[in-house]
Image (tube, rainbow over all chains, first blue to last red; front, side, top):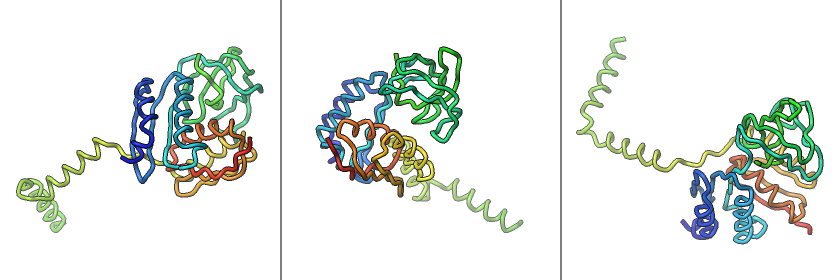
Amino acid sequence: MALQEKYAELIVAAKNGGIIDLQVREQNNVLYVDGSTSSGELKDSLWDVYNKIDPDFRAGDLMLNIDASAAAGTKAKVTTQSSNLNIRKGPGTDQEVVGKAAHGETVTVISRANELWSQVRTDSGKEGYCYSQYLTQI
Amino acid sequence: MITALGISALSFNGCKGGNKDKQVPDTIVTDTSTAASEPVVVSGDEELNPKVKDVTKDFPSVTATVSGGEITLTGTISRDRLPTLMQSLSALHSKKINNQLTITK
């Protein structure tokens, strides 16, 4: 209960923001907050609240897992810092690069392979797996 | 064979006589409370290791070690890149993240 009080502002913001399937659980002195949203801005704002309550995330008592990556069947924009995004044969950096998507390019998300990787198709028809963090839902 | 039949018949009788046996309602109560509040499932180290490696690939000055379902971060990072790293690692279902990074401006 103590951790839910410490992070009360965050929990309230997640509820009010409309986080989907919000779960708040405390286990072995760690608070686990899970859920999803189609809004990258909401996710970032929750992380700002976390950073305010626990500056630089030092306490190790919160696992904030808000999934805001593009859902299967949607279009997503490649939001790398500036470089091309590698498209790989399978979900992992050990997998062969089979193509690239340019920064700012639009791709179709076919499926979510796991927490990190999405299966995508580029407009030129190339299919493979890329790192979900660099995809922003349109 | 006969012994085995005897045991199964005995335990069957035990179930039928459940209302006389205090252990039966106890078991039911435990099951109900488990269903009401699902425990947090933590990934094993074997599952975490390759994913942590994928995440930290873009952060060459960060060293991440995985042990007992916990991720421990050492090395250096700039403050503006820290949330990106923490967000990605927080999606992996680890038990916790021990942030021992030295933060540079």
